[in-house]
Structures are given as C-alpha cells and as structure tokens.
Image (cartoon, rainbow, N blue to C red; front, side, top):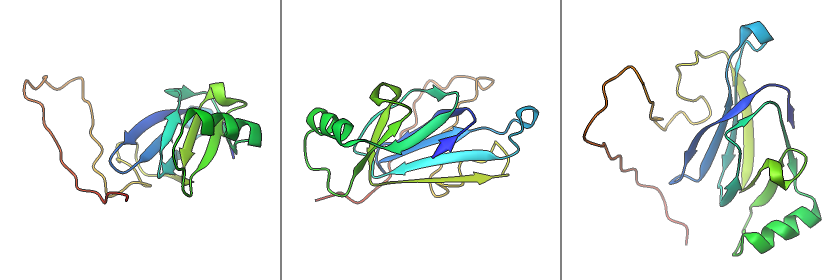
Length: 142
C-alpha cells in the first residue's frame, strides 16, 4: 500500500494492541478526507512520529528473520509490516492492518476505532494538577 500524503502517529492503544496512524484533511494539498491506518494485534513496533508519505509492505524473508531474532517469542498469526523502504523506516509486527478514508471532521476521534474515547490535549485549557486514570478491561491472551 502506498499513501502519497503525510501521516502521523495518532495513538497507540496498548491495552487493545492497536496502532493508529492518521493523515489529516488538507484541502490546499488536495486531501479532502481524513486517512486512517490501523494495525491490530500489535506485538512489536518501531515507528516514526511522522511520515511525509508512507509505503506499507510485507517484510522480505531476510527482514522477517532479522525481526524474529530481535523480537523473540511466539508470533502466532502476526506478520511483519515494513513502513518504507527498509527496517530503519519503521516496522509493525501485527495480526492485520486496515485503512480507510472519511470526510468526518478532524475533531472526530477516530472512525476506525470508534469504541475507544481517545484522550485529547488542549493547550488552551488550564493544566490539571490531578491526573485522571482510565481503566478499561480487555481480554487477556492465554
């Protein structure tokens, strides 16, 4: 998959093993939609915070061998996705990847992860002295 538009790391939901990259709407550059790329069942990753454009491909057998050595343990049904030309551009070991585009407003949390309320940082709001902890149950893998 090739995405000829900027994408950035939008959220990593550890408890649900999900990584979400997002390309914002930018009408001046011809991007009238929001693009989201969602990796599910993530077990290992190395990603940049921003990509000017993004190629997602299956790892070659040599790259997968390198990753299996670096990320020991059972991979189960996971596969290695390379972000860019080589492993230095980033990688995600995950069960699957989805992508979609929507004309939803940029203030919308996520259309690929609608059940999860994504936290938002608002620099115009006063800083809270007490931290809020959110607990979400999720099924444990055996």
